[in-house]
Length: 258
Length: 115
Image 1 (cartoon, each protein chain N blue to C red):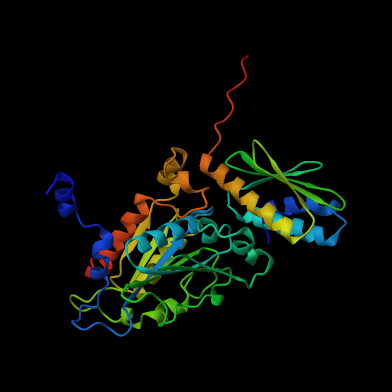
Image 2 (image 1 turned 120 degrees about the vertical axis):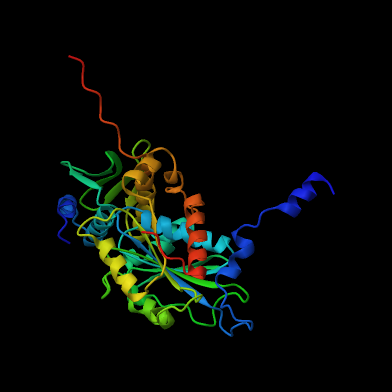
């Protein structure tokens, strides 16, 4: 066996090799419908961060071997369609038709839909998705979304009634919240976080430092900002690390350290 | 919308007599202002300038029956708005120009003039 063969044999497993373990049901018999998780991405700041983070995180989950549905809503442009290189006539359609839905399939196991009106978005049906892949729904929104739960549409809770049941030892959490952007204008993110924790006790909460002092420094120093004007999903360690952390915490129910 | 920036931007479209073009002008202004809380609008006698982080990314030049949109800070790409197709192209260019300006970050203040 030569050096290369030995290296390949010892290659550390990456997230794609083991992601299916994190969202398994834990039962010996495969479920008829694959188990799913919902990750809510709430962006407080203005600017392109909502679309940028949504596209980046969706790509990271897809690269980890998951079947991903990205549902995005919010008033400001661009939407993730820009980062998935949709034609302008497609991703900008809601500007001329406020009821329009932008949709696409940027990759075999990544579906995307955007609407300015969140009531136009529907959760994926049980029949969708590639067999054999654990499924995840990423719901991305910002402060402009009008909803009873301040940005958390009812269907998120409807998708996972089990998530509201007190979690027994070993049972995985099925919902997670990711926050991004500075919490300004009355503490929108803080209120949202409290509402989420009430609805999904013990569910993982993660913050993406995209904006604010730290994010601004990274942007101007050619960090995250390098991809912000590019028509392709951002490939950043930030999103890969977030996806990895979320998958582990969803599976093991690790409490968010505060 | 009660955003004062939008009010300032919409004033520039008053000279457009074609209703269809005027509507597209107003729609464009609304979308540009919404790009970021940091977008600034400067109304000049014959044009409206949109900037972010101190960098101009769009220039609107309204005339009686047409609207010219210049996207970019350095080399400007100009689009003549005659209908919705032109509007979409101009808005896409404006978004790209905005993202470039956003990416570059705050423009450093000009050094003081020597005494």
